[in-house]
Length: 203
Image (cartoon, rainbow, N blue to C red):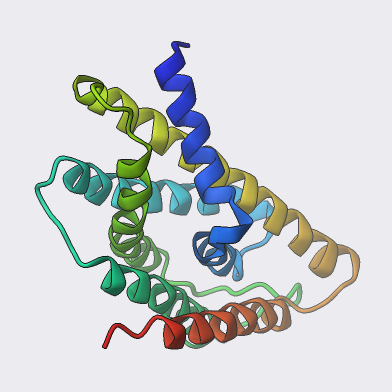
């Protein structure tokens, strides 16, 4: 692995896992709220859908093809978390099995939402990415974008693994109902994000 690739891979990983920039972490946590450890493959696909979305806008922004005011992007990021939390609570289904798992999720719609929200988060990533670019290395942009996105994906998978393991402890070992876990996680994510959105109102 060359130095530039490794540097941007680490930058992507650190950016998504940075506790000071917890809005992206909060989105991943909310995304996991309705899933159990046994459904890790489905969640991993969701993470990839999110990566596809943010990769598109990150690349377009880095190439100066598109540009949006930072204050609006910073406002819309917590809005995506609130919408994800509301979707978890009201639209993932109310039929519950004996084990507490939802049985009628609209998975394809969930993937679509995740890609769209990834587009918004990608604009948020773009400011950090641009600031991290080394002068005179514009010819390495594709490599840098690839490494950064792989780093973000690895960071997302780490967060997902933590949340799903925690859900296993709560649901499978402590025998809490999955809907109660979903309401707790989604409610907490929505509450924090609402405060964040109010602090970032751009007008």
